[in-house]
Length: 106
Length: 369
Image (tube, rainbow over all chains, first blue to last red; front, top):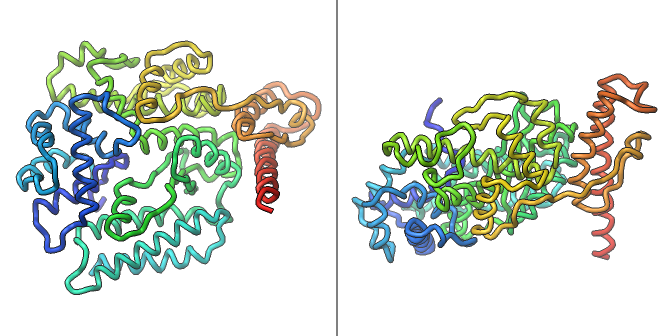
């Protein structure tokens, strides 16, 4: 096999791509619509990590998977709880979250 | 270099596929949308400097490649129309987006599904302005079963995995009722035992419990449409598989399906019902109507299902008919060999579904005129 096989069920591939862009500061930025989506995912994940009763039909799939992943990782959940806008995502946090997601998907 | 080459090669393949006759106009639409994704992506990459983040472009290309793979098995010569019709009807009860079912015919004794990644659809919309209107679902089934609807019963188990995966039902259940809360699953450590474990060990059991819940959910989903035939087929296909990290023992699976079909209360089922409600989905319940085939199949005539519920019911009725005809054939069937009985029971089931498809098409044409 040429490359590691990703988890076919994972919805977190897109989040990982965006986190990499935060970490590497590429020349071409992602769109504002995508930034808004990522913030929504992080905020939703934070809400349902603190209280699973907050799971709603419209909760993005990525948020549920992310919540399941970060449950029990106190530093990550604390950091995510403070993200209100894309610009709040710090490079070192992106790196830490990416590292914790490494086993999940590509 | 390779990225742009891949995009052009994929575009050429999609252009070729676009000229292939498909049974469903939705497949043609999906091909057009994927072509649009590739053209817009190439245009952004060809500008100087590139007008799109390279990681994003690579992600999009990877997923178009996977979706192209979806389409290659769905030409008119290979697609098992009747089974796909039934699966599409069942899928439509669980998704707001139109599901486009494609098939992969494989040379192994296995069934599985691959669903499109939600991130791809989001990116196609936000970064390229292409709103893909359907949700592709690829199901794989053994080549020798492609015209054996009664042997395709496990595809409803696979559809259950798709419904779970696309709505994160089981992942939601793991948040609502984590591994240290229960309900306890057969053959695995109890929730109390897991609660006392070290973090690393607990994480391993969490993954196993999630996988077992996924399998139980898919079994119940299958039983909701196939009734006792869901268990009946499994009893023939893998009668006595032991527990593993990915699958419960078959005896445990049969026991849960029995509870469901007999409408006995079960904590595992209740957990799934709660997760389904949280995700805004219907509860698991019997979703088929019994259809009598003894008279029609007994006289080697197909049945005429009156609605989708009876189409689903055909699988249980057909399976039971085949089992009976195999063991104790009556009247006309006494003169048939085993392989003839199997072939004709499957043919009759396939033709009965086709009857419904023709009636549906006829009714749709009348309404449209």
